Image (cartoon, rainbow, N blue to C red; front, side, top):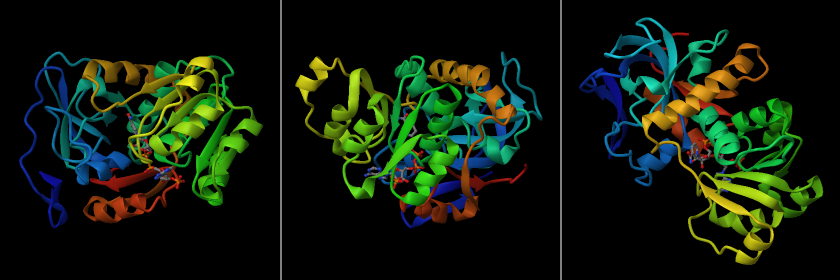
Length: 323
Ligand SMILES: NC(=O)c1ccc[n+]([C@@H]2O[C@H](COP(=O)([O-])OP(=O)(O)OC[C@H]3O[C@@H](n4cnc5c(N)ncnc54)[C@H](OP(=O)(O)O)[C@@H]3O)[C@@H](O)[C@H]2O)c1
């Protein structure tokens, strides 16, 4: 099969051994589309190695068709249209994955749309509702609101009745996020978000992929009993924590990653998505926001677009291109 190899001279779409399997509990997929994630750029830069046992190839999510199922796999059959959350290996013509990490394409969506779902909706669901334990009506601050994760999280907040405020890097992005359901927002290039978020009413939960550079301001706008869920450190990995605020406001600091979780935990998250979010997608109440796609051979150009913070929503790579 062909796969995208990360050679020192750049990304190259080359002949490479087909992955072994499927073993018991696994399925083999023919990849139609692969999603691009910020993590792929970090992996290329050497800051985010694949977890032990995972494919060394790039790619955390795909859509495609089941080719073969291993022993003990129920509910999935050859020919079925699916999408999958991977620990790696998605930038390839075929991938072998634990069946618990595979979901059917929501009815009414095509394979291109389905590739934009697994990583960002699983991340948003996990951190808003499982780690963040959102209670009815609680208010949410989403940093990087126009990112793939942000555009999924805005829509989940709207669908489940949580007012949300976004921070992002341009007024055009703010308009797009408002159209998805954000109540208000702040362009981060205009300085600190603190006054704007306080005027809006503060946050009970913050979903934060920025880390160090936002820690002090996050603590200032987090309401009593609020949760700060950190999912990235685009703004650095070390900062000072104000223990006074942490204690007096009973703030909770939660760190979370999806990729390194075992298949059983990923399966739990995807099971919740299938029950709670797939029906909303089928009814058209929410939809993945797709920015652009490139042929897989042009993955380097797709990465440059993401690196430049130019995307609003998901960037995809066309592998077989089947819809
Ligand atoms: N922990 C997990 O399990 C998990 C899972 C998935 C994703 N993530 C993290 O979630 C984030 C979003 O992922 P994605 O793939 O959806 O990203 P994405 O679509 O590439 O968007 C990232 C956006 O972050 C903003 N940004 C970049 N550098 C920043 C900085 N220094 N300070 C503030 N904002 C900055 C930029 O938007 P603006 O210019 O508009 O602000 C950029 O477009 C990434 O940090 C990723 O690593 C974590």
